[in-house]
Length: 310
Ligand SMILES: Cc1cc2nc3c(=O)[nH]c(=O)nc-3n(C[C@H](O)[C@H](O)[C@H](O)COP(=O)(O)O)c2cc1C
Image (cartoon, rainbow, N blue to C red; front, side, top):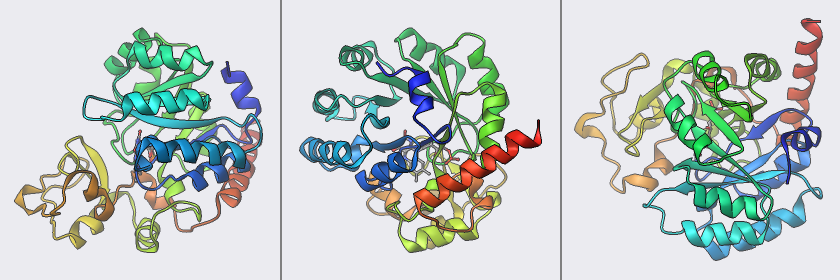
């Protein structure tokens, strides 16, 4: 089984390019692994389990031998593909499975059976405790301000509470963009940084040019936290809500009441195509490098930060 030490020694910087609905594609995973970070992708970004099977074959062929990568599985009764996708993940011996929503022993056992690792993402201590009880190898602490379904807790509070009862692999997500942020996450007690929003603006992400331009132009105050796009609270770019005819009614970190104006006719998953998610870290993103350029820069910044504190 890959352990944390093996995983870390194969990386240039302690970074997971986090799974992003619609945006992380097989090419993104390959580019990340080639650049020396952990690439990941939600299984549901492939339209069928068969397409996932083909994508995993392409990923294995495209990445350096033994490079760790991760597939994100939504463990929830609303995901009818879960069983089939687990079988495909096992067939390809995917090194890391990141579970969202449910942490269940059956999934952990299935991944451990072929020697893979399971990391589970959480926004609260209670969910971290449940995941540890289910036997996961790692916890992804998704703090306030993270893109997607971000949490509401300070990263300091979340990491230190989880570290009180868990000494396994701990990842931290939420507005981590710069090499010094990676060091800060490690100093706080995390092993790896979990970076989503920064990777929206890379050449290899599947976000359109308009989306990337909005990320570049936005700052933290352009991000609204609302449960009205997907039913679970998440962070979305206010200019994209306005472009869809929605005027958020409250500001300043509180859940936003979108009222009846949320009028994306398709709703649900399709809403993510026009209501764009991003985290509060958008304010420090103003370019769209290749993944290789970004990782190179992160490595330089990380080393400089280490040297600056002696
Ligand atoms: C556009 C977008 C889509 C996302 N989709 C998913 C997803 O499908 N599954 C998941 O576990 N997390 C998803 N996330 C959350 C990320 O995996 C990660 O937790 C988060 O981006 C980290 O915070 P940051 O964006 O501030 O770096 C998404 C995030 C964004 C920005």
